[in-house]
Length: 205
Image 1: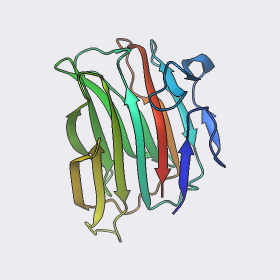
Image 2 (image 1 turned 135 degrees about the vertical axis):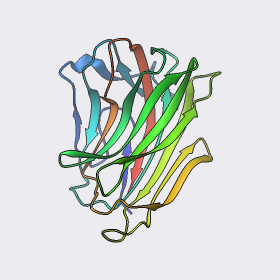
Image 3 (image 1 turned 180 degrees about the horizontal axis):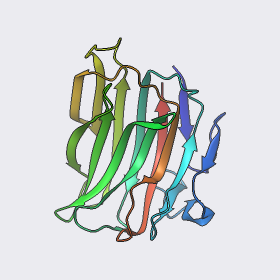
């Protein structure tokens, strides 16, 4: 099992990390953003630029993929029903799966989307982050199906320590993980302002 740890200093342990933003000050390791430890990844919003850290050691070959991170949206303002991607796992030219942060009923929610073999996405439903603190722990576990047309791929979304969504009949053969993006990776709109924080990011494959 390969394990990648991004302890939010914009560096990894033996990992190629790059910043995917035209504005370097949109993403930074700060003490203010810390959820555990001394520093966290602070993602500053206010425009529609994609602003993220990327890790690309998978080399287009990963058929199992597990993610664990913490998020704090307490300093973020989002319009009702808006959402944007805070974690994305990709293969060349396409998304394999993504985790979105959404706003609904004055609460922050997590949504996951997983690509099927036919290119369409299966979604997990929406799950509320602790409304008292606007922060929480998010994990997912992804396994590719064993062959074309086989519906034995797996995906689980875990909030805190509780499994919120599980699918053990996923037809996702042909998908592999090549690179992951962590931050404001896609879909932010102009109504999203302030900043949100990410910490204790661990990927295992």
